[in-house]
Image 1 (cartoon, helix red, strand yellow):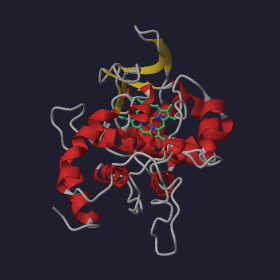
Image 2: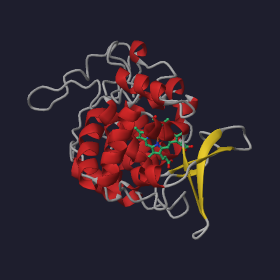
Image 3: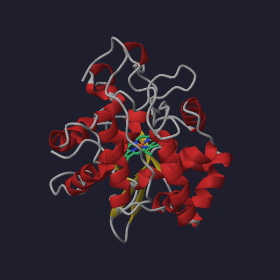
Image 4: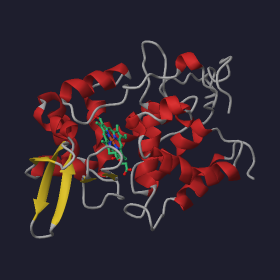
Length: 286
Ligand code: CCH
């Protein structure tokens, strides 16, 4: 067992866990990033509910949300880290796993601070439907992300996480990867959004997505309707063009916005200590 607060030791164990030869593209990294994002992306600024504090996904109300299908794999992978470092909260572990995975997959360094609690107040558990619906378009994602306090530039930067991982027909119903190297963080997603021809395809399960088939390499890539909406909405498209051209700028902006996402709903004092973590009475207890 590591010393309480030794996040470096936790980082090392998360990094060592990323390589998973029998899983997806050989890495647990992408699903860790999605776990971190879904743990935080329920935040509602107006009611100050949801967010990564509390690790509500341990409970059926949040964990069983169809939007979170598949994230049990990420949580199961991380159990060994929790066993080795029992002092870390799940809320810290899941957010740190996302940050470590991004870095290890070649992405930017993202500032991260611990101190989240695993206490969940029933009244603060987010209702379902707070995460974006991939079948929709620009208005929907603007509405969802503005609830968390993000502007158009930040929405596009965050969407660049779709450089990583894939869609699974048994999770979201969508199928395939966005880029050819889905375990390598880059700005390829933005470049492909602009450079390839995306054709609408109706899958066997009736779900509509966009596909590109490359005859030379015989590879098929995909985009969600929400991804495509980043190129049809002029305000979003400006930033897709910027990030497709300027990888450094994308990395810089992604780092800032992912940090902001991980901190939603968390209040810290000048020393960085969380001040709204232990004020929850009568909620679930880990
Ligand atoms: Fe995402 N995402 N995401 N996404 N996502 C999916 C997979 C990943 C949407 C829908 C989906 C973000 C924003 C959005 C990742 C990171 C981020 C899937 C497939 C859908 C559907 C799930 C499956 O079948 O396994 C929509 C809609 C939006 C916004 O409009 C943001 C923001 C982030 C992080 C910053 C990552 C990573 C994956 C891959 C997961 C994996 O298991 O490989």
